[in-house]
Length: 258
Image (cartoon, rainbow, N blue to C red; front, side):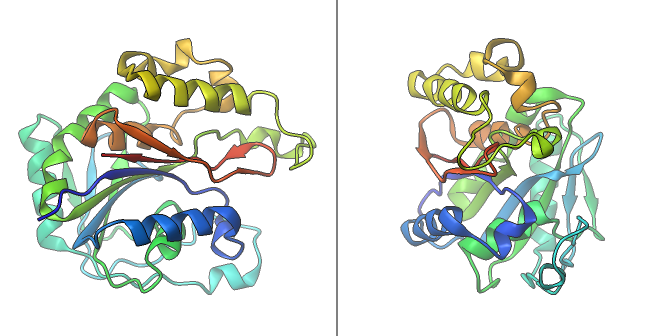
């Protein structure tokens, strides 16, 4: 069986589901270039827990975990099946690595999961397993989660970290736009890409101290932590896929790790 890469996807606003723009085009291109996975595991910035939790529902619900958007967005569903047996394997791999995990049979698919998957695999016919992140434990912990799950890549499972390469929603009212980009976005994006280019994993894990404008780009880091899951699963051989900058402040970079 072909070993799959791992991915980090900037999922952007929930409105990406209705207005996919460049992100939709890039994800469709990526899906066409990948072998079809037998299942997908997604570590989402929108499922936070103190310890790893693995969604084990046979038919996970579509969660609309946002407010104030057009009614059409709430009518969208992503009816992908779950994979309870594979969820148990995910939990077992995490347990073996000393990362005690629990199964969560009631967990659905939050928008960090279903919005990008609608653009990657719109037929919703590939089983999906959501995975929580641990915002209190930092990048090195999420890197270890990815390392623990790396064997799944050789079993036809696509591992995805879903977040945003920059994510400062406090700046939504600051007047940034396609014509006036937030000044911290490009320096932060460039630093991340440069560290991947030279394979400096130590610097990436220490991004909060070393990256320019780290605390402006991520006042809290739950949207960058899924990057380290994808990185841990496959190592630092990274391909950056530029999907533009949304609203002048949300960089939509996608990373593919082989």
